[in-house]
Image 1: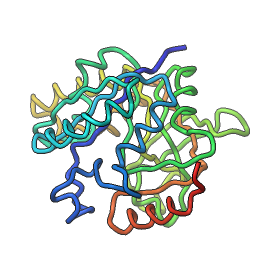
Image 2 (image 1 turned 45 degrees about the horizontal axis):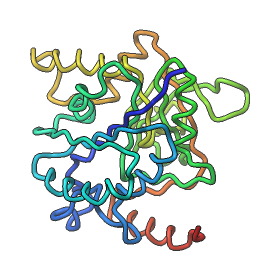
Image 3 (image 1 turned 90 degrees about the vertical axis):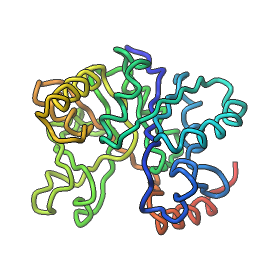
Length: 264
């Protein structure tokens, strides 16, 4: 058993698909039903053992997040917040490296704010509880129609038990052609990562500095390296309501869906 107490939030993205809203507002602070997307993620976090939240932002967005945190600290008093700045857009893996001084050699969670996960039982809590019992990373999976697989990272995986939602992942294919997709199980934005992933990213960063890889550190490459070295990566299938908030159209759909949710 290992306790997961740290969360990294990659909030440095420019949110180009949400323009013109994101010309003035960072994507994670775009409002959905009157609240910033980031609020919905922090609502999930307080249901877990996470105590430290690390926001990795871009240099031009830092002040906006500092302003946001002035009120967020009052709404979420059990959380300690940190901000790290990614000065260059060098990929999702590079984002996580910006938090390496705080993560050190611990298991840690990652959550992307434009994926909203609605479930009767708080799914993020279930993900972290399941991950605490496993010896490896745990990624969130969702089934999509075969016609949509080319938009996602798709996994080859087998169930750990005959029934249930836990899978052992053997391969990840980024945005494959429909005929080349190993399944219709795709990655969505909630992970718990083992210390080996941070070590892979540090190794990739050294290669980058020596000119041995391209100029982006992709998190999926770190997954590939872990799988190649026979480390375990699992997937937990999400079966609740998934709301993509990454485009103007999907944000409007999510807003309407939340309006239909029963009030607590």
